[in-house]
Amino acid sequence: MNGKIWVESEYGKGSKFIFEIELEEREDTKQFNLFSDKKVLVVDDNKSWHSILANILEMFNIKVDHAYSGEEAVKKVCKCKECYDLILMDWNMPKIDGIEATKIIQKEFKKHPVTIIMISSFRQESIANLAKDVGIDIFLQKPINPSVLNDILSGLFLDGVDIKNIDTVKEDTLKDDLQSLNGSSILIVEDNVINQEIIIGLLENSGIKIDIANNGVEAVDMFNANSTKYELILMDLQMPIMGGIEATKIIREKYKDIPIIALTANAMKEDVEKTKLAGMNEHLNKPIEVEKLYATLLKFISKKESSSEIKTKKEEIELPEFTNIDISIGLKYLSNNKKLYLKILNDFYESYKDVKLEELSDEEFKRVTHTIKGLSANIGANSLHTIAKELDVTQNKSLLPEFYKELNAVIDELEEKLSKIDNQRDFKPELDTETRDELLEALKEYAKKRRSKLCNEVLEKLLSYKLSNEDQQLFNELKKLVDGRKYKIIVEMI
Image (cartoon, rainbow, N blue to C red; front, side, top):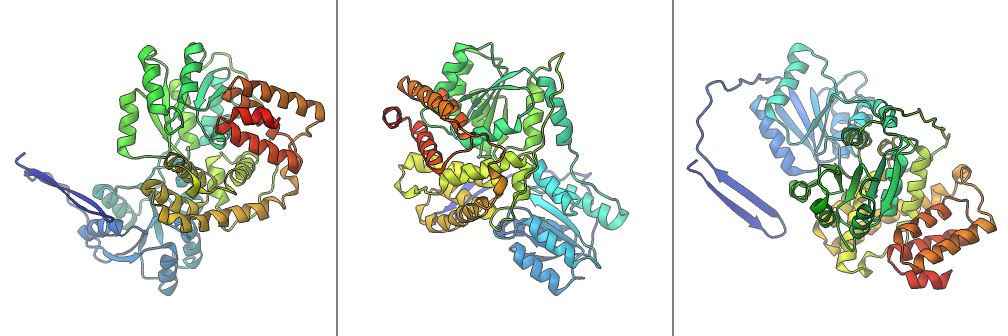
């Protein structure tokens, strides 16, 4: 193609990948409509995206104004309500995200309606639905295609077309269809107990039988021991002892047909490519989108001919208002299961209230920051997620003060708000002495045999009861010891 390619990199700032090629101009190039009388406000905390969007909009002769945060966007709109014909609003911004900024702006624009287009790097049905809830009808995924944007602008400003949100299959329909998999068996390979609970909770009442492996070694052993039992494997990528990529390669040496679905908080192209090369069939990002999880299971698992409808019992639970957590996002990720959401909030609090990242080894530091990045998004702690994501990507420990500031804000609020919920434990049965002793004895025996999976199952059962403060602390400590494979200490403690 008579071209050339090169890289320009500057330490601490980033890299540019540049290429030049010779191309012939197409004769049938699409002619864009022009909107010289229109003005658009671009709202995004990423300056690079401002330049990209400004260049595209200027192709259409549109005047562009910029806001680099949700707060700045609100101020500009309040100052001049009739200045903008359209707002392009990024979803994921610190402090005030795109959803919250839209709520405020919509109140200000009651007499002077303005169209807001939500933009995100990830095409998540849950976020699209949140956008729709606050009156946003158009949801675009980065990178923005100029032709698509021109079509949308033409529909808005020329034809008056009511352009609706992305075409989705409704979660409720998929959830109903999921019952056709009643009796199926799947293996979840995930080292983090909270992530295990999230997936189990999302599949509650589906009738799907679930086994848990806490790392790749356990997954390989369990699958080899009973390869005909499982119809699908959900495989986390970053785990201690053995990760998901290596485990998949080992399984694929003998078993080519079992569907293996990657679970990861990394959505980078190279990560997706690694999963494909290892033999994985599909890729689900964390936090897991409910609709995509259901659709993936329905795609790869054969429906059962006679599947009876499973009755679900709805729990009426009042959730408090949070400052540092957007519960609407957390509930969306958990299919509006308030009971499950409350449990995940409690587990997040117990797991990370005393975390000291600076005391961890480099490998543990990487694993824990990666986990917190995913879980903070799952519960709706947006500001914490933003700094956790940066910490996960850079592994730069100079970010720890800012990270702890956001983490402590979430932890302190959880401690305050959750302690005030009277019905927080109402749905948990009492733990009688006989059951307690039997379960602890079982835990001790499994610990002697170093059976991590069975130890976790016993602890999950113990933690499902209403507990005294002493037992809560004891079982949480035992859970940490199991996660750390400290079996000798577990036996001694019991």
